[in-house]
Amino acid sequence: MKSKSVGCREAAERVFEFLDGELEDVSEEEIAEHFRVCGRCYPSLAFEQAFRDALARARRGEKAPADLRERVLEALRKEGYDP
Amino acid sequence: MSRLETEALPHLDAVYHFALRLSGSADAADDLVQETFFRAYRSWDRYTPGTRARSWLFTICRNLFLRGRERSLRHDEIVAEGTSVDPREASRENPVFHSTRELDPEARFFHAVVDEEIFRALDELPEEYRSAVVLSDLEDLTYAEIAELMDVPVGTVKSRLYRGRRMLQRRLYEYAVSTGHIAPRAEGS
Image (tube, rainbow over all chains, first blue to last red; front, side, top):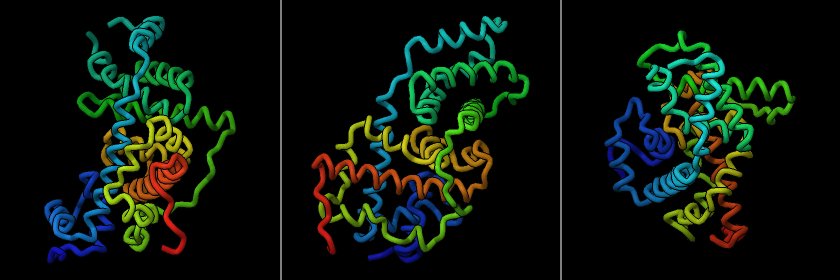
């Protein structure tokens, strides 16, 4: 079953804009409704979401060196930085 | 405390992560971050208060990286690209999704890929695609911010994100197959 205003083709074309919060001439609700009711398209949304989640998890797990801030400030002070 | 410290330094970690993805090494990222903040300090009068300091710092960082890369003649493969995503391309079924939808409908295989492999796959993307994906998916910049930062139209950002994500998904899928986290799709199915 499909929603009336958004078809499978449009949902496929807009899936990234939808997940990125960047839809223009179509509302988030319309696209969300299509994915909610269309058994054919919903798995593709779940697929893209799982991909994004994996990237976000990797980003959260990566730490910058603990002393980086102090080293940057030290280098700036040598250039005359005086807060 | 100066405005540099209140507006720019809170983004130190984000700039480091971006520099790491650009350069591919912790030492080079460290140098890029130092240089980025040094340039930001020197041109602080050109920063408009209240605008997004993070995008400005990313722009400085990327420009420094690209300049260094030109000097070392280490060019990524130049990839022909359009300024927008062809709707026919976007509506075509994603081949990786097509391969996994029956075996792994929730795409759990992505969660089985270790972080190091995700970063390795990202590092192998051509810079234009890598930067777009990192800035959007890891650093949450908007299309307009990425377009300004990379000095390209928004349509090109969408195109780079589309192709970059598909390339990355292909690499992660191949890794998941090679480590046995998902079975390869049978030929002809």
